[in-house]
Length: 447
Figure (cartoon, rainbow, N blue to C red):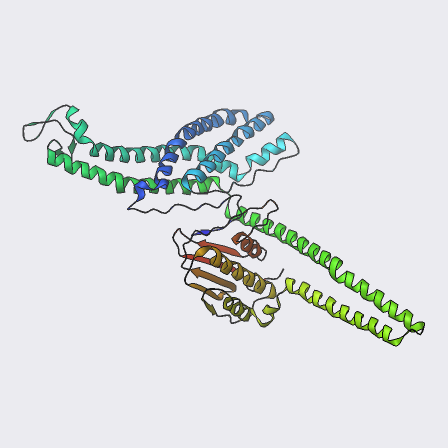
């Protein structure tokens, strides 16, 4: 399961370890490729680490040297950026980069900002930590793999080993394993099976475990902190809320101008015509016809105003979230098991977000899931409103972020609405299903 976060591009998930098919799983070989491909990066990073210490410390005793030292220290971010990209591509973990240090008004101010920047020092620490970790993971993973392959193919190369005299006084030409020489057909067959088990099961497990260590180190030293991520989410949510409010206001303005305002102008002209005819003593029937026309135009304007207001707050929510969801679930082309347990009524804003979120999720189930059973559960978790939608479809749901103006569709649109009230979205949808999606938001949040 992953929690969707405001990161550009497609969200990535850490691959699951499946022991009985791990050796054929691409994630196993991508993890090994990371250990191997990151090794030269780690060696270069260690060299840069030494340069920063050897040059940066002596020159930092002067003001000019302090700027040079800060520049050298900032070079750590290049290695951090490369590692984050490799992590996303090979380890299945997209790490959000920390915010860059603020630039000062002078070179010295910029140097002080960089020297006091926590993410810069964490990236510098990773130059050494990454070298130690990568050389260890590559050496261990390679040793286990080569050992397994060597045991499997021992029958082909074992006789090239120099003969050794064993405890029994006889010469043996095979490898020695646990005090036993592998130089007979039965021993070679058993040794080959042992090597096959290493390649099929032990090496993938070791490889995935080492990759997990890499993910932890990269996330801890090269990623944004929870506070930074929270600040970015709040900022993005506010920007999205402002943009959404501006879009809504422009739509209302356009519809009022093109629809209701035009009708009201026509109504005023009709009533003015009727008034002029009354003043001139015109035929009462003609005046009555004008008043009837104005009356009909008034009712049409009221209908348009109601339709406009309905887009702001659906009338179905006037009776509460449970009634609205009951009506929505009854209109789906598939059965939906609905369970609502709300001791208190959430705010109107939260009810609208939850309602439209469930509508979107049910639409996704209808279009994409191929499910035979769907369940919607609504309740409270502390002071938060919790909405869970589950189906037994074929899975594969994910948050696709994406349009240039920042507005998403589908799950991304649901996530955008949730963040406007400080909520979050969690998706658990492995390939083959089932799918579980959870919406959580403060029940009394007002915007």
